[in-house]
Image (cartoon, rainbow, N blue to C red; front, side, top):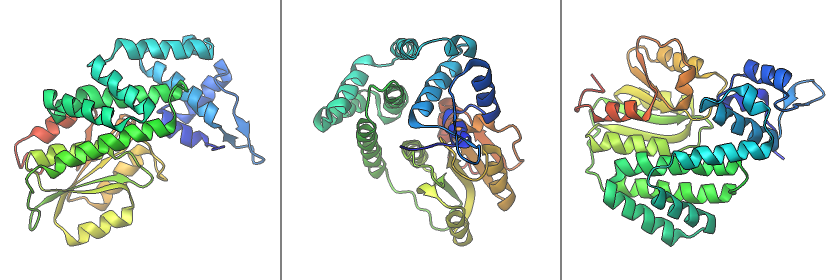
Length: 298
């Protein structure tokens, strides 16, 4: 059984630790377990409940109402929200069915047809991302296995890589580069690959170091290449710093380079250093990547 600290739960749910403690005391949200040291820890089931509550809370439901509900009622609310917000229902349902059955042929045929109809960019925004969100919610409701989620993510990853490989190469020698990476212990690769695709498509000289990249690796690369911009994406955070401290660290180490932070955790950043910028939404990411060549690096 995997155990989680309150900091782990904060990073995964987007709910601050002091808010979690308040919800526990006021509403009995979960009953945390205690180590001999008296520190809180949470089980997989505790985390699953907190993620469900967090998702509904971020949809605008009041915590006092959510906390009063039984687990079955919470699951039904999530299912209702998911059904009401679905784009391209038929394509998503086919890919979801394929994920449940580990049917690679059906999944590949469906996503290929969707991309032919919409193009990769619109397919990712309107079908793939909502599908991944729905899969995550089904996991929270114990209706989908982690293996089924990994199956879908791997096939989506392969499709985006295939489309990246079809783009013309952008020469990076003697160029001011964008360096794209995910922080240490960040393993969500699809947002990085999609950003890499969008930048490459627009002709930017960009290098993608991938996920789980150490600070030392980034610094070593910057010693040998002309990096104009460091761009990292954070979906979870298992670094030793919170999101704002992590941004400040890179801005301080590279004061003459622009630092771009994207992903859900940027919502917790209040102070933005002069050489940094935040990408808070899919719309902002698309705008950032669609600027004329030189716009991002200017």
